[in-house]
Image (cartoon, rainbow, N blue to C red):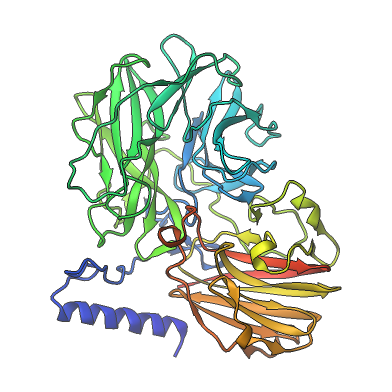
Length: 539
């Protein structure tokens, strides 16, 4: 039986079981456990990766699949630029480009200097310069807001400047009616900036008391955050997230307020919440953290994130929803639960979409594809491109302390292969990696094959096998991970004896707001040479 046949049989079995219980396909059962998510058909692109543009004038969310949370979007003439929270991945803050809001392609990273975990940022343009305002806690304790800037969106970007706005996250930039620059932050508070945008010019003060939902709504917590501001006509619009970004699927939501002055008073939108997941049967969970953006032909859109039903492991993905302005000067969302294809924005020109993940390691793809997890300041010194491939010096003694190289994915099911050559007393392997507390994988030393599950070695699975060069295949199919390896460059394969189930490796279990990524670790006192990485999405 093929992989596709197994998946189809599984879906048929689930649908039949649901019918026996009187459930509609995709509905939640009485005990609030979701049934299997309904199958949706995406158009397939390079390597079989799903893509949003359906080729018939419609699109199907996500517009950027995989872990791209807290999207911040900038319209710059006929171009759109977007970045997102990169957390512990460095190089980070990858800039994406589009001309139609549906087809996106990465340009490159804006941040190379490690600042610890990076949460929701704001990308803006002022007086011809590009700015990214960044919440970070380099010491792991005290949050502050940093700024980087560039004359061109492609860079080079400046080193981070600490604005010394202590204890704040989620900045949102706006120019007030007085011509002065302001940052709004979680809370919802504001602070005036100097004209150059690289230092504060006042004190942090309360700006707005957000709209509150009824007490009996099932949410994570109030957590007003992610303020994004827009000036249109006489009004300033303040779009905010409340309800918590994870936890119950019904928690996260989009609300709005408006004022004729950046200093208030702010009027709650009478249609709040504008976006909210209403139940576990919907295809996208925990929808929120929205920015409003004008489309190429003057229509308007909301860009925000959400978890995919049944696939929290992929992280929060970037979603696009149409909206309209109403006669009373407010706005409303028009996309429903985003379960169906929607008409693309008018007037845009479709450009390149996504990128191939397969890599021969002959050119630098750090940031755009590869990133070290939680790197030390000197981490990039470990990596060197050679005629043989990408050489990574060993660090630590296991995947947990090796600061592995990671690659995000956006497909539900996929298969990867990689050739690994050990040099000296190196240990290396292929992983599905969330963080040091949550990963699975297969590792090789010159003498042993090691198995990792539950973020620790399963020593009872150790096998003696001399290895200097090995090709490893990892398949993630409906959250079931299977490993195979070959010592003759793929002519014959050994099926590893332990399959692993990874559906629970996500934020609601392990925290951190991360995703499950392909990982490669290099530990010990030697080095590893990486060659011929192959990626293939499974239907």
